[in-house]
Amino acid sequence: MKKKGMSEIVQSVAKMVFPFIVLYGISLILYGHITPGGGFAGGVILTGGFVLLVLAFGTDYAFRILPVNVAKALDSIGALGFLAVALLGFTGGAFFYNFLPKGHIFHLWSSGTIIISNIMIGLKVVAALFIAIAVISKARLIRTKDGFQYKQSGERKR
Amino acid sequence: MILNQWLLAALMLLMAAGCVIAITARSLTSSVVSMGTAGLILSILFLLLGAPDIAIVQVFVEIVALIVLLSIIRRETRADMTTSGLYGILTLAIFALLLMIFFIYGNDIVRPLGVPVITMGGEYLASSSRLLSAPNAVTSIVLDFRGYDTLGEATVIFVAVAGVVVLLRRRGRKDEKKGDE
Image (cartoon, rainbow over all chains, first blue to last red; front, side, top):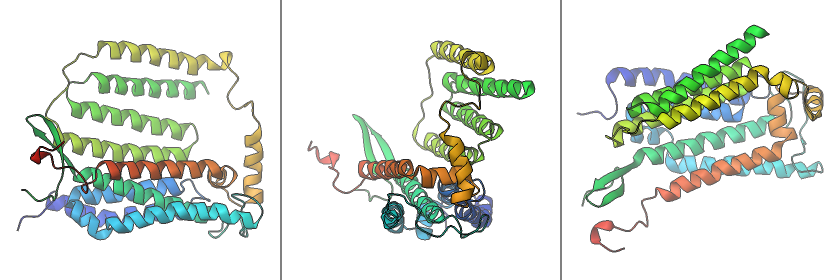
């Protein structure tokens, strides 16, 4: 049976390293209001983990972990959730008003809406970049005699 | 502080060298790798200038971009560059020289660093931990004080991904083998 993707060593190392990358990304997102980091940095790191999976195992394995439809839904949930946080500020009187209790400094559940916004931005960034990279990695340009023809891998030959 | 400035100048010189090699290299692989060098040094510069948030984002975006470009090159193209990049070298060298002069002697030309014209930032820094109890002032500015800008950036990412998905879609594409235009 021929395996897809890279060699056995790369696949084993990728399997071992991937949970730690995900853990680091989630920690950067959750602690974004206390330590350096935040939604965008954590989302980009999570995307790096998925790029590792795409390279080591091929696109199908990554799609089994995070299906494209789920990623599209997460993208929309992130965007709409951030907008909802902004709109819920009208309960306090203004757009982007921080209406939640602020808590104590250096605690995880503090600083009101910032942590929710961080989670939403992180979801949005990881889903968006994963969709873009997955779509680009499936696209192929076939050279024909008059120019290039666009194709997607996995398309049946006719 | 003089050492710090010379360190910054040396790093910027390395970055300019990476850009010049990226423009003039014959093989696309070495060009992409030296572009990655420039990005890595840029993230080190961000770290030295005291912006760890941007440094994290920069180093990971650079790694992802490098991986994507390398895999695309390995898969798609056989062609390498054939032009000699003399004008590219000249332009970049002059630009890098002017930039270094500006950064080294910029204190005499423009306002000194750390004395901004708009003093709004001090108010943000002071009220970040007091009002919002968020120690990371960057996050509290990006997501609370200036949250409207971040909403715009999220919209930009959304539109960009929608563009990628629409342009590279499979459904509804005309079959060119049948010859209909």
